[in-house]
Image 1 (cartoon, rainbow, N blue to C red):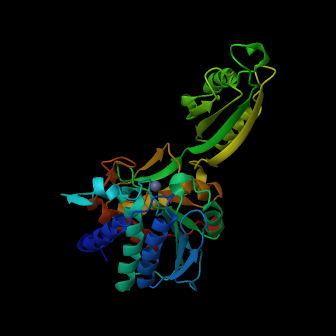
Image 2 (image 1 turned 135 degrees about the vertical axis):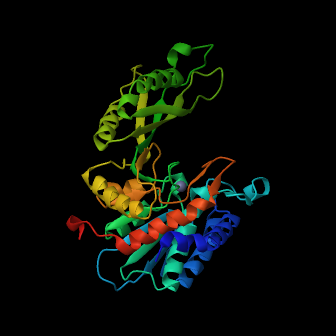
Image 3 (image 1 turned 60 degrees about the vertical axis):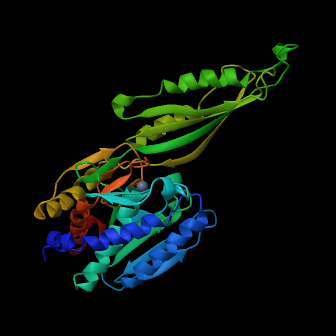
Length: 383
Ligand SMILES: [Zn+2]
């Protein structure tokens, strides 16, 4: 079967499902809205013959898991996507779903409802045409990627550990290639404890936490090392109680990005070692969230080479790219599971008002997924 022709012929199916998904708004923080979308997705999955399981979450939307060919031999291919978006309910009123030529606009369309539509439609069509390979295929639809995946990381790791290949359907790069490296992220909160005093009557009795924080912020800024792919920045700060009181406390958040695990360790040691400049001040450092980097290691190079072969034989672009931002692929890659990311649609405007999908990219991405499902050879070391 010529997958490209096949999916071009059936692109309306992918687009129709994508529109349905965009119409169901699903901001990470709105559990009811995300659950409504999750229930719709679970129904669509059942229509493709999947065994569906729902993993309840208290604070965020429930996670939907699907499996096909459960009894088939071999290690499963795990398809991953997040169904939450950064857009609050009601966004559609100002940022409506509309198609203009080959561009389909709408909140969450690119990041990453197009990826979800691809997974479900490709498997549904392959099965309908007796082309679904007899191998185990799993899919995991998570609900809090945009807020750091704190409520899904455990499950992602548990499921991925049993997979032989993980494909993540974040948007494709501009060149419609795959992502083989992502920077990791760590976010820290530094709480500075000072001592309050009236700034007119007895300022000498106080310890100014804002002054202390300011010194620490500048010290931390020096860890920035763009030449090695590291960036360190304080982007949020607060403190003090009133204009005439020596600030008794301050706190700020530090955002760190890095391409290698050893760099993450180096930065962690630095921030945990911070010493107050003013002897009367106290610093409390806490790591809030983080994602390990997805490194372009030997395994990643092998995994990409096989993907490139399949893309090449379809006549699709064969290239890899690295990206500064993280995704759930960072977790699975850090476990040592072969992982490729950016298998979703091409488009523009992630997290921006012009967010849109280039719908002509969908059949190409569908063909690549179908080809991987049919032809992927599990890494010898992994099986
Ligand atoms: Zn995303």
